Amino acid sequence: MIPKNLSKNRAVAVVTAAALLSSISLPALAATPDSALVMAWNIDAISTFDPAQVGEVVTNELLQNTCDSLVDFDPADESKVVPLLAKSWDVSEDRKQITFHLNEGLTFPGGAPATANELAWSMQRVVLLGYGNAATLTEYGFTKENVKERITATDDNTLVLTLDNPYPTNLILQAIGANRVSALLDQKTLTEEEVDGDLGNKYLATNTACVGPYKLVQWNAGESIVLEANEDYYGTQPKLQRVLVRHVAEPGTQRLLLTQGDIDIARDLSPDDLADLDGKPGLKVERVLKPQLFFWIFNSLDPVFKEEKVRLAMRYLIDYEGLGKSVMTYLGVPRASFAQLGATGALDAAEGQPFTLDLEKAKALLTEAGYPDGFEASVLFGTLPHSAPIAQSIQQNASKVGVKLNLERMANAQLFARIRGREFQSGMLAWQTGVPDAHGNASRLVYNPDNSAEAKLTQIPAWRAGFQNEEFNARVKEALLESDPEKRNQIYYQLQKDVMEKGPMAIMFQMYNILGMSDKVKDWSWNGFRVYYDTASK
Image (cartoon, rainbow, N blue to C red; front, side):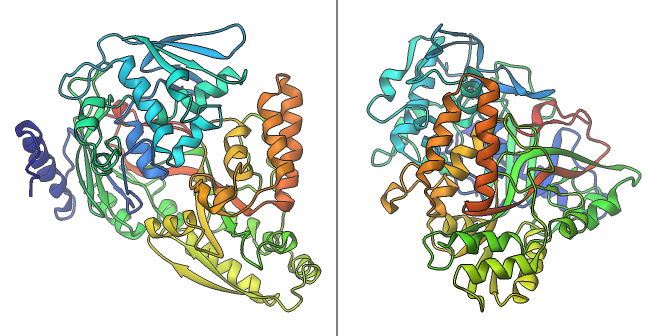
């Protein structure tokens, strides 16, 4: 059914895209369209396309291909940034002001001009709405009171960011410039669609309205996504006209669709599936280490998990090595530090994962914490294929020291809602930073500026865990503003070691972005921070 408010052209696009999408469920050996990239992916976590609110990895990837940011991560070297909306930028001598010069001729899908004025409004909007992604800007001194004076457009092609401190320029470019919070939104459309002063938030729950290589033309919740190339895009046109994403939760079904030729890419395959597909004629396995950590988070407001030694004991119930060689063979590498491998200031592989499965150590710590006979607690987890086997492995180990863990599986959207609402004892999920710098995760997994329930800092996992350590907060701030690179690294090195002992989560693995792919797909491009749909071809 076509919504009544769709334009004629867009309605035609939806019908055409829907027809293409339905074609991927043909019998065995059905060919995918030559003009479309067809993916099977678990997309049940999608709840909005608003850059001010999105927190899920899946939606972030889709937004990165529909909503350009000020700058981009260099596909060949993720530690560097390259121009995107901004063709160049200047930095003041005191490092407190960055002036971005935008490309000329920017337009929204449909041809309406897009300028620095709309971009300033778009970025101000993130702070004014106050959803989770506001923290991306507020941590650098932008507030509801000052954001209209500190993010300004001096003309149609010039945007100026005025900072409160001389932060490392590259960090600002990575954290803000290459982030979804600098997406250029269609102010006119969002203002027209505004409901009760929401600045278009309800509209963006099911739509995109921004400048990018693709545009969203269809989303059926729990079923499918259709992106279509934006013919009004200022940059190079995507090589493929459409990206079709089919919601398929089961890895085995994704594998079957891939081997039958019904899809081009499978995004959630199990290690067994990947091992079986690896090297098969006509198929290939692609992977890249990404800045995503899979962890077991503990609610520090809970009577049991508020105890530091209980949280530390849980770390010794994890069989990092065994799981790394079985469940996680293709999916990730053991990692206990909050700073991901490859980040500035990160501990190396050995120091960043000092734990082993040690039931005696766990038992001793539980005794010291006042739980010699263990306790009972729940563990929430979602539909990621590795979540259940990891949870079950820990459950078995925990039972040997008197800890009864009750496992509860749920849809990812429900899991995220429970964790963000602090309605849990413990849970297993992933978190992905947006910058290749230790500050990216320090500012979310360690730093918590306000632990009150009223703060609702839902995009800060430390807040979700009810964890606040003022000493840790001070050290995160100190490292952020330290101008000497070596001193800055040393602060992060020690902080990582201390957080592994006292922090609110047991980080277990750093994940790979990995997929099974038909060899029909050419020029697939990605790094730890971006997937570039527009370069793919057939």
